[in-house]
Structures are given as structure tokens and as C-alpha cells.
Image (cartoon, rainbow over all chains, first blue to last red):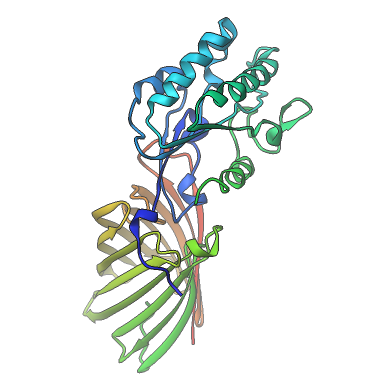
Length: 176
Length: 185
């Protein structure tokens, strides 16, 4: 009934990013797995850069960037280069970048969702240059009428339990 | 574990929404329990856990201990440890339970966890409880506050509870709603 108990099979995972990660009860969605939640509310690229080598040898999920939209707007290509350098520097054995989610927050600028779509396209292309980095394009799973599906979020930015169920079901393919 | 005056009894139950179990207690003090997870994960990642323990009572103090071993079907990790507990009824309607849990998880290594739980009996059938706990609800070591009610009716008891993290990145945010129940034959 049981296979041999090889603890090497217990792969450790890191989830790192902003409040979308920090607020995720990831242990409840993947109770049998060793997943470290390194999310920090309000964080962005500076936080990723401060965590160099902190995920060494682990499988890493990154969801970050929605707090940096003004930086992205200023110079999207420079930001994207910095983004990949920071993510590569985390040291993950394999890294999955979760694409930016649509948003519909009260104080949002009108161009945010277009900016998010443009940035997602850019990182999908740029990831092709990094053999250990993949982008999970989840954007459309959270989109309704071009913005965040209100059924999956309680304020247009942060996910509710249904939103996290969608995210978990996507990540389940990559957590083995 | 439910204490009874018969020599042996069987209980079936649910713990914290995610675990079902069967418990066999004999000679009033010795019990063995088999617990199976019902995680929303693939079958290979389900956890099977075996407990063997002893419990007794001395005046207003109930006490006991058990040892446990659990592992996933896949063998991706195992856990081994023990619960040592004492529950003291200060007055008939108020008791405090303290539990110490040395636990080793093959992924998270060793930690000594504990839980302190005051309980108040509102009626013969209903009690309210709160707890501060460092015992993992799943695998990860967390500091959480728990609170809930226990309703008893004959051989059936049900315990809905909420669990709130009081440290870490999602402090006070990711609230879990947990249900436990037991039926003693």
C-alpha cells in the first residue's frame, strides 16, 4: 500500500510576493506539502530584491507587481529586466511566476488593467530566455468584462476564498 | 476521548473538518485510534495516522498521553510525536486543559508544541472553549487562537470552532472555520 518512505520526495516550496500571497492560507489548500509563505502586504520589486538566495533549491511561486504599477508605467522594459533579475536571484530550482491579476480597486487609475495585460505579455515573452522560469498565465481565469471578477475578490484587488480556490486549482498541477 | 463506564467502546468522528477517525477504547483507560485525512489533494497525499494512548482521572484532574505516527500514502513525509495532557476542573463549570506535544515532521523537523484551553460549561449539553495553540492544524508550525462550542446530545457531540493565526504574514487574516464531531457507540 505504501511506497518506501523517502523524505527526499517532500519537496519544499516557497510562495513569495505581496498581499495576494501573504493573505493566502496556502497550508490549508495544500496540507500535505511543505510550503513557506513569504508574502508581505504592500511589497513589490524591492522586497524580491531583498530576498536574494532565500528560496535556494526550492520550487518557487511568485505573485508580485500589482503594487508597482506606477514603476511599470514609467519604464516597463527596465522594470521587467529588474523583475527577472530579482526573481532569478531568489535561487529557486524552478520558478513559476503567476501573471498579474486584473484589478478593480476603488482608487485604481483607468489604465491599470491595460498596463497589467501589457506587462503579462512582456514577461511571458521574456521568460523564454530563462530555462528555470515559467509564467503561469492566470489572468483570464480572474477576468470578467475586462476587470477583476467580483465573485473572486472582495475589494477588486484582494482575493476571497473563491479566488484562492481558483488559484489553488491552477497551482495544483505544479505542486507534486 | 470520551470516558464511559463500560469496558470497551468505539467512537467514530471528524476532527477539524479534514480528518475522520475511528477510536477503540478498552479497559476504560487504553485507546487506539486510526485517523485518515480528507484533504482536497490527490489520494497519494492523504495522511494516515495511528495513535495509542492511556487516560485516567484523579479527583478533579483528568490526564493522559498518547503516541502517534503518521505518513502519507506516497511516503512524501512522516510525522511522529506524542500528546501529554491534563485537564483540571477548578469548579464544576470551569476547567483548564493543558497539552504538550513533542512532534517531529520529516520536512519541518522537531518542535515542542503546546496548547492551553479554558472551558466553561454553559449547560449540561453546551460548553464554550477557547485556546492558544502552537500545535499544527496541518503540518506547518503556527501560533493560533481557537474558539468554539461543544454541543452534546446523547452519544453525539459536535464542536464548531474558528481558528485565527496570531503571528506570521497572515496574522488575524486567514480565519479557518473548523468542525469536529464524534459518535460513541
